[in-house]
Amino acid sequence: LRGGDAIYMGGGRCSLGFSVTGGYVTAGHCGTTGTAVSGFNRVAQGTFAGSVFPGNDYAWVRTNANWTPRPWVNRYNGTNVIVKGSTQAAVGSQICRSGSTTGWRCGTVQAFNQTVNYPQGQVRGLTRTNACAEGGDSGGSWVAGSGFGQAQGVTSGGSGNCSSGGTTYFQPVNPILSRYGLTLT
Ligand code: TYR
Image 1 (cartoon, rainbow, N blue to C red):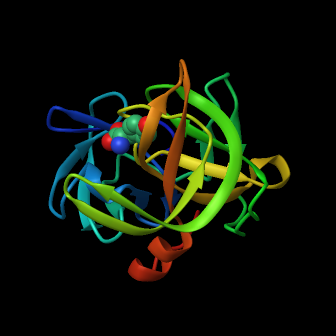
Image 2: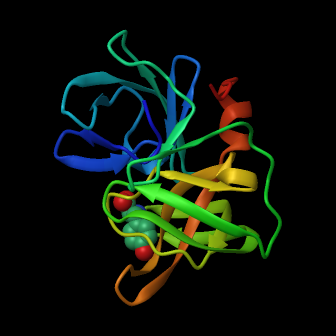
């Protein structure tokens, strides 16, 4: 299991957020509790064990024995970032994200605790950035700090794209860990 890799739910694709003991976290809008998931190689991977969207935008997937949680995020340049913790980066910090549509993209943390209105309803507590994202990047990893070793959150949504630039919101990771009692691997 590696952050930023593709995950498939039926016909839809999202991205893996961060490995945790027993599976990984991703975005809630990627699947409801009970949804089956397959991995980047389309091999059966697990099931959404908990999911909240709207309100928040978080979920975790319990994985099967064919998959091993590893503290990695795909940089889409042949290397991985090693995740060491989840200390929140301040407004103004550089931050990068990994996702299965547009790979590794970077920007700046602009504001915490943002409310975003999606067609399905309102999500509170998101962090706004000027890093771009596109459909299918959802659920992917946001990292900051030394060596990009600190997990920040999972991609929720936004506007724009990676050609002209965009605004992207992510769901902070620490509330996901505490809600489900999960530990980063
Ligand atoms: N919400 C999109 C998804 O489900 C991801 C996305 C993020 C799309 C930012 C557009 C955008 O600007 O994959």
